[in-house]
Length: 145
Image 1 (tube, helix red, strand yellow):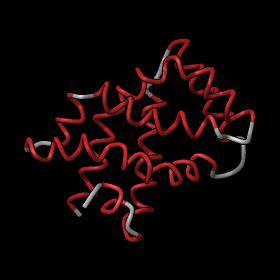
Image 2 (cartoon, one colour):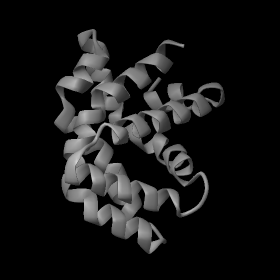
Image 3 (cartoon, helix red, strand yellow):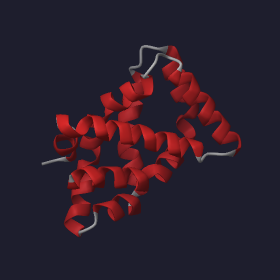
Image 4 (cartoon, rainbow, N blue to C red):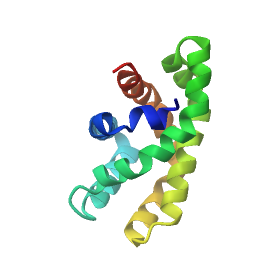
């Protein structure tokens, strides 16, 4: 069973989405400097699209994200430690996740979403790589439950 089937069953999906949203908030709060200000401003703009927008987007893209991560996670399971494997392969893991968000942003109907994503895409990989260990822990929490 792949990540998408295991983590997105009805009993776990809401918990996984909530924990991913919390992880995003914690990651965002840890950012500082000019890039941190830019990220926080962009995030605030996206939150302003409509109430619950971030939660909605996370819920919508999780299946594709987990499908993209399935091969990397499976390699880690075979090696005995999927959390360490995702973290050790942050670049590859970030590329898999960004392929999903790139496609989503390209097809976004709202200009604010597309424009905000395009402005921040250049630095996105670094930020996603930094979040991989926390994401791996979230995934691990729910693959054990």
